[in-house]
Image (tube, rainbow, N blue to C red; front, side):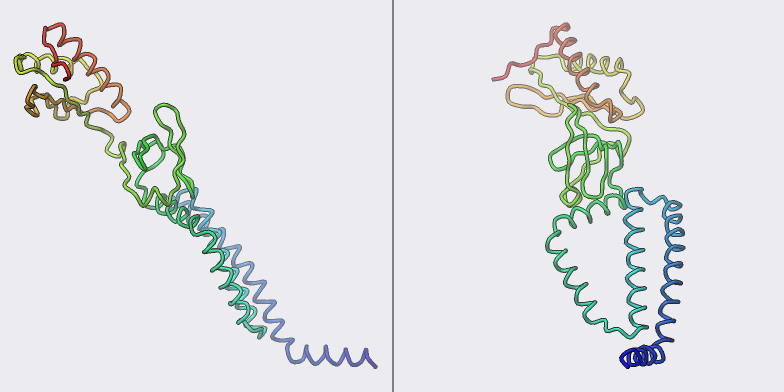
Length: 262
């Protein structure tokens, strides 16, 4: 008798909901196949559009997850299941995750913007957050710099993107500026000729760009000479050291003394 009762219940349920259940199963199977197809197409499209390799898995995962959620909601709607509790759980989880990971999300957003807008790229030399170095890695959450003295600097992308970034390598050349002082009794023309000869002998200076040598200011006890030349970013420090050493040596050999600090 009980078996007959259960049979009747199952029969009634199938009679009332069988068609809806069958449609839901068909929609689920078709949806899963369609999502797999879209995953392949989207992956190829991201590669063709040269989206950064660090961003491709994120965009792919985010899009496919959204498709799965939409498919589940659609199937639940076909079956007639209430969606109120489902949406409430998702909303509560989103709020809790947002509060717990607010700093992480800020770094994540900064990483995405850096990879999309490209204020700098790999091997660029930048100055940011009081640090200077060559970019060796751009991750979703942080950027890695290598300094000239071989220190690794890891900067969170949230702070990095929201502050001033100086890209030293973007223009493929850099102006080298420095000053030195001379006494008022010094022969200015002779000093200028010596500096220009030193500059001409320096092979790493870009001669196609303006070279400036001359008096930039007159102080109470001395005059200040300025030197402006253009170099490749990688040659900046080497050329600066070479020029300053040679100026000291050549000036001393020519009898031009620098004023003593005091």
